[in-house]
Length: 162
Image (cartoon, rainbow, N blue to C red; front, top):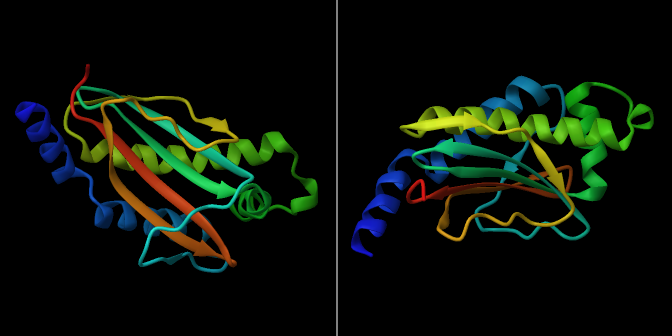
């Protein structure tokens, strides 16, 4: 048990709330700089149901899961902002692709921070909160508000490759 705790502490040194906040801020400026800014919260916030969860897995010695949770009602405006298209022109597949791309961008940057990280998986979209591995823990979390709606970014990392 002590070895597992030490592994969690080592992982935590690489991905923390500040690192995630910086990655999200850079992503937002690059891809959403033309719209209203993302405003970080001081306390954790719940994304109200119905929601969408975009996630991307990281394999390797320290597997993980990067998730982006948004209220379903804000997913289309968010996708339209990313794609710089009119909301009316977007279908569900466009929205899912856009949310998956946000998770993918953040996941790629998180992967670069984790030693011995393997491949980044393909983005997945679900209408439920994430189900991380049983030996995972929340390494970093950022709750932010955009246009009066909460968006939550969470990095789950495992203590080992087991």
